[in-house]
Image 1 (tube, rainbow, N blue to C red):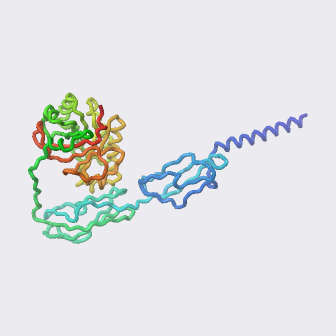
Image 2 (image 1 turned 90 degrees about the vertical axis):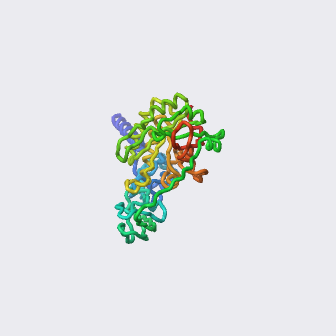
Image 3 (image 1 turned 180 degrees about the vertical axis):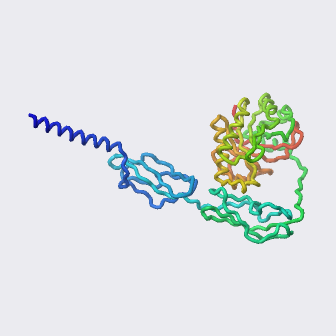
Length: 401
């Protein structure tokens, strides 16, 4: 009898041990490459989006999470992957991959630059140049020139990023005694003509207004068919500088709300970091929170002449704008990016937000999508003493009731 009891106890112990092992085995995660197929030498492009499923296959198993690869920095990396094997056991493996930058830097501008004799500016910064990844690619001038001697010099600008991608641009440097003066015509664009030409059941015509328009008679604007106003809330004084409320903002926004004229907001910025962009967005929100805002809040960066010296990559400037716009959006406002046609085509890559296009012409040939078109800066209308920008809004659905 005693032997029988011992036998039963041992049998139960063995059975419980087996069950326990199977139970524990079902929960612990072994590193195992036997049941997976992984592409060798995975090379990914910086900032591009890739998922594990693009390079990973299980033999009669199942991927538990289709993770996205981190491609925000170049270099060799490792990603942990969890999957169920063909026996329905949870397993993990690691994918080694390399992120590379194979995009050459960008150089914008024509084939010549003119400077005044004795100009101390760095010649390599006369053109806008930038890299998709490197904030400070190497810039150098190839050729001889003398800024103290009048003449024409054939030079080459060479821009090299950290991955040794190279772009060059041949140009002529003109050193002159006196810079030519620009000539401006006195022609004006009248609001009533723009309204007649562009107004239909799918558009609205309006203005953008700041302190430069002075005291505005909004009753007269309403009488003359102004259907919306984009209002400057404020601006940043300079790089890494303070934010200033537009001196006419409060009077303007109160009157626009009284007359029930739809109003949007823009902020003129010198932001050079995502932290600064976030701070500016919150500053704007604080200033507009007590008023009715029917149209988007706009990020307005225009300091392109300095861009090459700001130590920003193309990715950086897009992330700066995206941070401002996303902060605006999560706080309950619509958001929009403002820029001229040239920089929309060459620098901006923000498809998730509507565009306010600036292109001063009778008919734009910009092929990208845009919700609003600023077509002139020499507009005239009764109620404003001086010039004003005139805009056509095509996506009228963005006007909040």
